[in-house]
Image 1 (cartoon, helix red, strand yellow):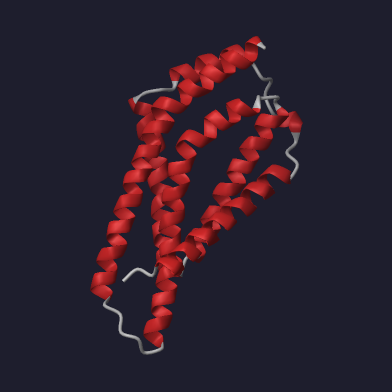
Image 2 (cartoon, rainbow, N blue to C red; image 1 turned 90 degrees about the vertical axis):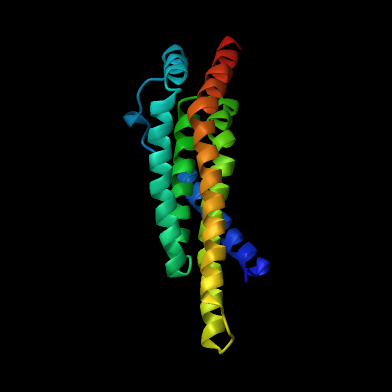
Length: 192
C-alpha cells in the first residue's frame, strides 16, 4: 500500500535535488568565449524547422533513457534518482545561464523550458519518489511489519506507467508545441 506521506517526502526530495542542481548550473561561471554568436533570425528558422516526428522520436528516446535510469533508482532507495535529478537540474541551470549570457529574453527561455518541462520533471520526480517510498517499505519489513510485495510491485508498476504516459505527453509538447512557442516569442522580442 502506498503511503502518501512518504511518497510526498520522496517527491519533495527529488524537487530539492532538482532545485540544487539548477542553482549550481546557473551560478557556476560558464566561459563565454566558447559560445557561438547569437543570430536571432537563424534561431527562429531552426526552431520552426525542428518540429516533427523525427524530433519527437529523438526526444522521447532520450527521455526514456533518463526515465529508465530513474526507475532503476527505485532499487537504490532513491539515491540514483536523486543523483540524476541533481544532474538534470544542473543542465537546466546551465542552459538558463547560457541563454542569459547570449541575451536571450527570459520569456523565450521560459517558453523553451516550461511547457514540456513541467510534465517531464513531474514524471521524473514521481518515479524517483518511489525509490524513497521503497526504502521506507523495506525498513518497515525489516522491523517485522508485513508487506505484500506482489501488491506493492503492481502498485509501483501502475505509478511508473502513469508517469511514463506523462513523459510521452511531455515529448509531444517538446517536439510540436515548444519550438513554435520559442519561435513566436523570439519574433516578438526581436521586434522590440
